[in-house]
Image 1 (cartoon, rainbow, N blue to C red):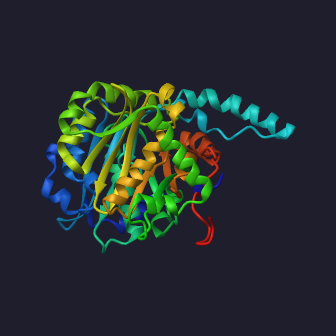
Image 2: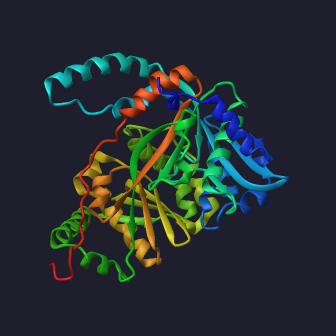
Image 3: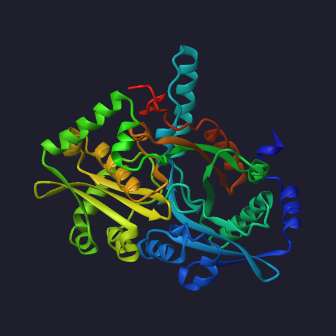
Length: 416
């Protein structure tokens, strides 16, 4: 047995010695946290990790999730903050992440035996999972430290905070440190040494808006002829079917709250993997909190709302968030692709520099110009035997579904 695959308690003790001057204050409610102290350590550009946003999530997830807010201190001076969410995780969420069945007969035979043994065991998994960050946003890994705290030490402090947070609830059985972006750094140097297993997750899809795109027409002109034709067909199809878009006001979000939630559920219910779901009042409370910084664009066919897409404005970056749609209607008119074009147009019109589209539907997002940013994370079960025999084995074979990534733009200025 490779000792580096099991938690090394001697190493853990040595690591604790290197951070003995630090202390941790843990709260289980945002109301027990100083708003001033928390926001002091969150960049102003990251509105979605600030106090008011975390309060909104806690309020709308009452009874569904729990939370831990950690202040990291050195000699009574706060040097970092860490945010955890506690969610119920079941093995059924991982069944779709088995690697594809091999083609060769002998490998196929071994694969079927391995899957036949492991799948029933995985389905029995039902644990309270400690998640570092915000499961409702891509790329929010949930921790910030002062600049003087070096990357390797940040990792040590995070692991210590995880251990301390796990002590607050004996039902916490595992931890996920997710949404880390490649390339790796000194931060990653020791996770495996302490029993964490690396996982590869779907890439974050984003579009860098070029400085020369002053209008949406400039963006379309940058495409190759094939994708320009496709875009025009999408616009024409929606227009022919009488689809109109409306930027909903706060009062209208309240008015259509039930319909927004129904459309959201039509999409999220088909998701292969989800750690949590929104509550019905999320869109309303988010709009009431952020006003024009949070937009909900609804799409109507006649009097019926058939889809919507939401977006956060955070400085020069925009986060395309949840969508909802009646796919029986919208698939026929390519509405989702129209939505993506609309978000790009909105971004250009509002001088955004980057649009984040998240992880889902990477192929269609790539057809509008979004490119993948590889991501990874670490997972650990606190039972050393289960962590070694099951988690280690499964994560070694855990592979996200592969997609064809398109490039819609001209390869040179001369290309038509």
